[in-house]
Length: 354
Ligand SMILES: Nc1ncnc2c1ncn2[C@@H]1O[C@H](COP(=O)(O)OP(=O)(O)OP(=O)(O)O)[C@@H](O)[C@H]1O
Ligand SMILES: [Mg+2]
Image (cartoon, rainbow, N blue to C red; front, side, top):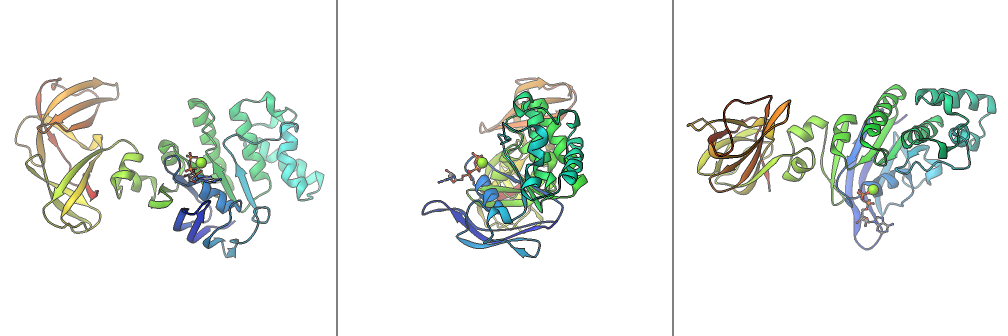
């Protein structure tokens, strides 16, 4: 086992690099997720770690081992793909045994190892089935067993759940989480599904056009996004363009003018005066009767939806900006058309660069 270190990596296909000067440390035994929209370079980075794409510049280490110039087959990786990539003409058993046979492991050891990993993914009874006779979720479990049976140094997974329907996705997600923890293997998972990333990861790297926009734990990205891009991608957030009349200090409350009111919001980083973005999650906002509440602005309720565990409001500010507010349970009063006060929590409202 080993962690992964990426130093100043540059990777590309054509003239323009897809990954430019990317550095990243992935702790030994952790599950790291590369998250981001289509085309941002997730697969490119994962395949570079695997050794399928040569680097233009930079270094790649598995633990102390410099693997930058090693071909994929010598990097000792396990891979799981979106489309399972099982051998269709081999049984479940032979699929899982494949990598072990390629490494000339004795048949008796293969039998024990394949048995062990099929049990871990809950498919002991399916050893003799052919892949065509399995469900998508079962196929992906076989792929996972096959990748882990060779006891690789790192496990790399590219959108392993995206071909599964919603219910199976959650089930296989649990299998991945349990197995990764039991085996303790350093894992890099690629996904564009933010819920999957939040649920599974020790740490997440959010990519934007081949650069890491933010790296942190799930709560860091959700509660302390460094930019409107992160806030938008990880969960729904209200993002409001504002003008700062004075520079902000990193890690302190700042004054932000919004709709004629002077609000306090938290500035994670120092910002110059000028354009900035206010970020507020719907569940951190409070609606009350129109009154002169501290840190609030007047608004009008446009829509109210009772959703069981929560009530969702869409409100409009005086200048017509729409803001979503999520309240726990049922909220008395306040119907569409009512005037109200929208209160911002200074600690949970962020002001970041635009
Ligand atoms: N073999 C290739 N040759 C040329 N350009 C490529 C190749 N593969 C990917 N690209 C380009 O590199 C960029 C990053 O692609 P990549 O496949 O890494 O994105 P991704 O984040 O995995 O996206 P998705 O979520 O759609 O899978 C894209 O602009 C893509 O068009
Ligand atoms: Mg991809």
